[in-house]
Amino acid sequence: MLENESKRFGSKEVSSVSMVRDGKPTSFFIVGKNNSKQTPKQKIQKFLYDVRKKRIVKSLKANPHSMEQVAGYIVTGLGFSEVDKTKAEYKTEYFQMRASFILQYKPELLGDLAEAPKLENHKEETIELFMEQIEQRQKAAEDIPTDTFDIDLHIYKKDDGNNQSRITVEKNYGYIGGSASGSKNGFMREFDKTFRKVYQYYGVTQKDIDNNTKRYIELVKTLARR
Image 1 (tube, rainbow, N blue to C red):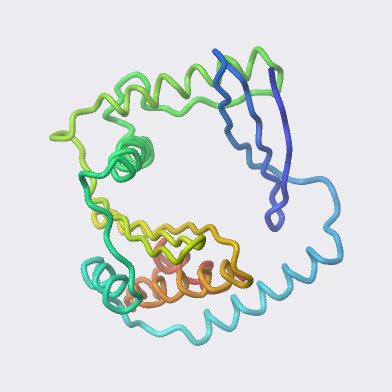
Image 2 (tube, rainbow, N blue to C red):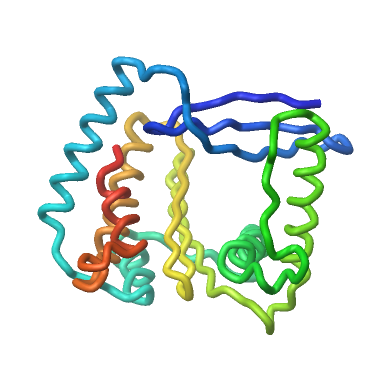
């Protein structure tokens, strides 16, 4: 059984396709061109994002910090606590992220499954085959031993009643991620501001700016989002 929904992100359309297999729902996303017109609200949001982005590009200066320094800032500067690596929540995220990083950075370790499958059309049988191939690659990545590929994952949390913030750092590949949930008015906006602080502290080198590196691009995008 398939369910499909799509959302707009800038000039792209992201289609979320959900499939129920063996009683378990699985979702994946398809990014492509969106043929529908932007709403007035979306046009305004895009305009404001572009204005902020141009301002950031013009004013951004080199002020880099290492991932070790970022981790220290999250704890001492922002009041987060690191999740113990023996906890189930850490083990679950580590397991998933290690496989994800293999797929992204070291697909050659998967042998015959190194090349990512492509979805040719949205027919149900095509999607089922695509999902089988995705699951095969995921399983193969999970089976790669840690002495062949490993990650240096750290998870930081801050709990305030019903409001919870989470920042994830992977030090080997310079990954910073975040999530939050809460009922307090303005809490999500506060977390977005906190997350931008982390990225801004991480910063960029002059070489990143000159060469328009991934680190530089991600920093500009993160600081421009609202």
